Length: 461
Image (cartoon, rainbow, N blue to C red; front, side):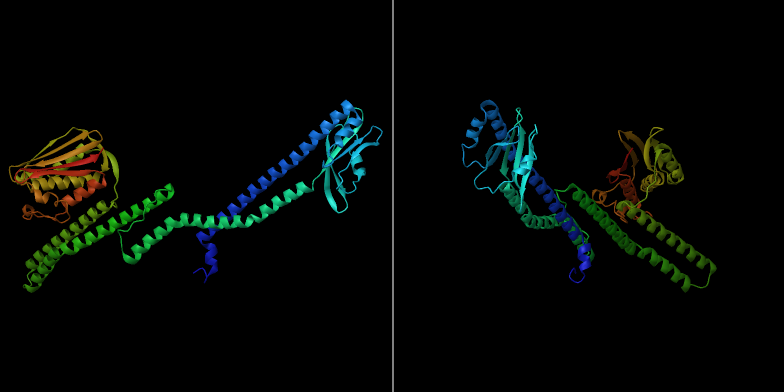
């Protein structure tokens, strides 16, 4: 791809990371090398000057204490001493002069320019074709004379030149190391991105919704990114599975009402054109269409709640009046069936929840309790607050639920053997569990056949 379109190479994140790392590494190395060279050269200069400074001070002490003869003896004691030494009398005449044998003629005129200074001064002697070949210091003596001492700097400059060459030639391995380091950093930095791309390709091309990116244990930032990505995939998978479940349930359970719909229409068409017959057929069709609409809306609510897509409008509220409203709403139904509904809870029980959704939960539980409780039975609704939790209990003396059905009653469109005689969709308890779960609560049930059931809703206060 990059060979066909080189512009893509320069725009790629890998190239940018490698380039920036290499540039940074090389510049950092240059700064370190320059600093190291400065320290080394300064140290060499200071050491050589310190040696000359100590020697000239020693010669000054010998001259002041013992005179010119003693100074002459000290200066010419070592014939291989690589220093030039000169003593200039007060009158300006050269009283003592020592020049190493291997040196060329020295221009003393330049040394005369540094005379008559009471402080140590550093100067350089320059000759034709050579610059700064000899470095010397001048030091005034109390009797008006002047001591001068110098040394050749060629060896020092040659050493520093070698160090500079080493630093210059070291740029090549530094650039190679910087490039290799850039490759390593780019590979490590973009590895999670490649894993994300690979996972997305598996999902897009193969439809594997269960594929997840391995979570690294080293980098906290990447760990958080990949964890969020995997969480997003979990939610997407849940949504897709929820949609599939809804579609399967709809496709399966729409057959019955649609068959009734069609049968009623066919009967009406086949019958004589009787107005009353047609009216009854239309009424049945309206009832079946309303039943289908309720089933679809409930299925959508259950799916949204289970997948976390349900929009809640939580508010701080007193749940006691809401329970009273639900009991009043079903009071006529219970009275008509001969079931007694009793309540028991304090006047104030506060929690944060969606009022309309909580109304659906309580309405479904109370409706089921009354529906499956025979005449003369009783339904008790109780509520209490325990620490950070509100518990609402609906207890009935109805037909009860067998052990093998307890786990299945929460499934969508499930109807037990004893419930088939009652009109319903089999979605009430699914909706209850889904809404309570959306509020980060849970539902419990205790039941035995013939002894009634106890449904307990636990909600965070």
